[in-house]
Image (cartoon, rainbow, N blue to C red; front, side, top):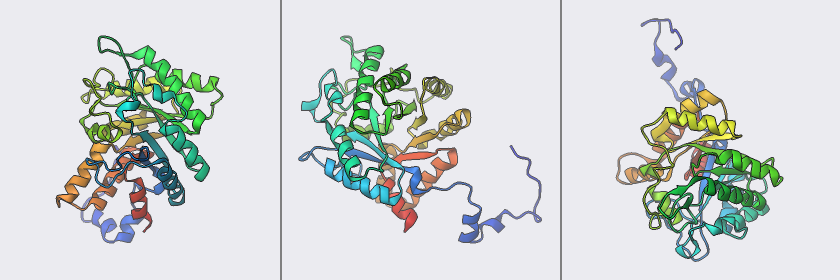
Length: 332
């Protein structure tokens, strides 16, 4: 803690608050479009666009995602994080569609790179959009999520994403040892320049509910994910998770969810100094939307305040489903 000197009336802190110009001059944290990563839920033509739990957000076709990427580049956004909506008919116990170059993720990546080559695209590495049980990993006969077998599958998925054009792969599964294994798999396949954004500190959170609706996992999920995602009561464990991922070659670290875990954003950034990303998850977005529609507050003001809080806590970038909207607010 810095040692501040001064006392009233010699020191009047309100002097630096008296006008918008002065407040802007001395503001410690700022949000810019380049800090924001647009979360995108992909869909096939004919699949529903609306996500009832996430008013203002729609699933996008491949063509619509490419158009969004072009707008994102023009708006100066930091990138796009893609996630697929997968119907029950495309799910199986092995998550086989995750390794298909012609799945939604692969087709979207190629379309985006053709239409907006400068766009940075981040691919989710986890099996939950593709498994018929809704878990991020492979399931044993007794219902246990199998760590090492899952890691092998995640390596295949990460290489598939790299082959289709993703700039960054983001393992969100929380299996032990997956970052190092994915790094080695990418390097062996000739993708040394593909970065890894590790979901290093990912909690077993109720705030993911709308996302599971968005990607079609809620009805599929058997049980819960507490055997591999973190207990919300733990902080030191999160630092251990981050330490392991740093040692295994992670280029960037994620804290998820974001707003309820700002302490972890600060601690991870302070401890490691790596680029740190916070995820304003579906439930956080949905709360802001629902409260604003109930007349509790203005959505735009609450959104920008929340994004500013992520930056103040130490986040270098923020994944949010409102990135494009926020960029317009910043530039209008």
